[in-house]
Image: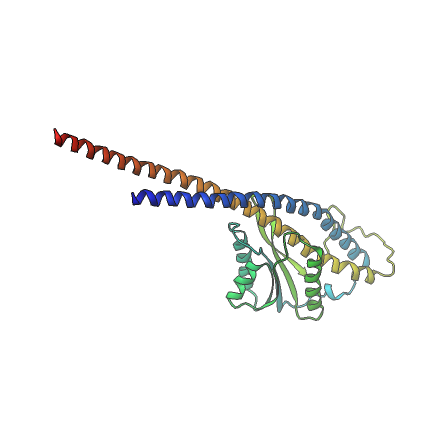
Length: 285
């Protein structure tokens, strides 16, 4: 009977866990849809600002700007974006693993961590964390990207960093999130897709080409960080929804297996009791 009690206790415990994972899946699905819409809505603007910056850079004919200055990459900074929470499968682990691989080849590296998971991982291992951002919330604000962008722009302009990389998880779809690394500084204005790079258009800059680039470059950096925050948030909720769905299914399988074992054990007990009754009755005859 003690075995049956243990089995019933385990089944009850797993059913309670299953209710939690099912609820977390529903919450993650709702937040994932909102985060996915935010990512998709922000991508056209991100693509457009890259195109504008590329055209202005070509038309201006090589402007000198602190954010365009290329130096020998002795002092490298990595902005690592992760989630504040877990229960999302290998989402955080994949981002941290990619960052750790890049850090191996850097001699004088600084870390700017966004998210509690990356902060805790690198802090436990004694890495130099220059600045950390945690608890940014489910609703990603552009002000957060502006704050981070201002910090790295100031550091790069003061030559405290020679190159800055951004590591985050690109949202491909609900099932696929890909950790990527992009160079943030020095800014490299991209050529607009589909445009002939040899064809140079004459623009009239007001007040000047330098002033236009000085306004565009910080916005380009801020937008790249903001896009990374949105992509990471959408990827996190997608990964969490998938993980909770798998956990719910696994709980159902465990309940079925334990129920089968419990029924067999109960049947064995009943069979044993019937056998004892029959044996006692036979002895009385």
